[in-house]
Length: 164
Image (cartoon, rainbow, N blue to C red; front, side, top):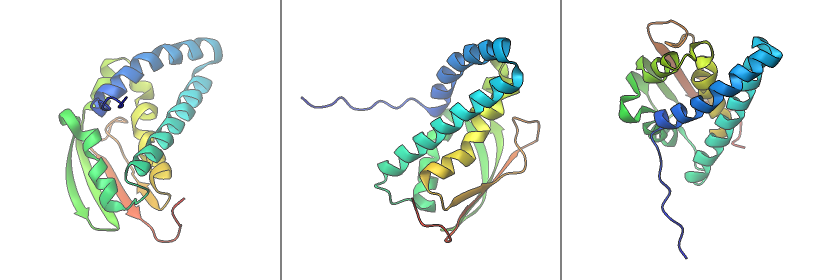
C-alpha cells in the first residue's frame, strides 16, 4: 500500500497551532515555577524543535546543504504573506535581508503571547542553522517582535566547519 502524500500546512498556520498549545503549557509553568523557568523551558523546547526541523529539511535535500538550498527553503516561512522582506545581498556565501512586516509577531501579540513571541519564532532562526548546516551562521541585531522597525537577517555560509 502506498503512503499518502504529505500535506504541508503553511508555516504560519503550523506556528498558530503550536502556539495555541504552548500558551497553556506556558501559563501552567508560570503558575507553578515562575516566569523565568517557564520561559527557559519553552525556549529550550522550541530550540530543540527548530534543530530537528532543520535536520529534516537538510535530509530532504539529500544533505546537500548550501546557501542556495537554504534560500529555496524560505518559501515555507513566507507563504501566505507571512513575511515581507527586502533582499539586500545574495551570493553563494551571503544572504542579507530585512523583514519589514512579520505576521508571526502580529499573530503572537494577538494571541496574548507577545512576551514569548521571540522564543516561539525569532530564536528558531539561529537554531535552524545548527540543524540545517553548522557552517550557516546568522547575525541579527534587532527584530520586529522586540519592537524594532524591521528584522535584520545576515546569514553567512562559512568554510571553517565541516558539515555534520
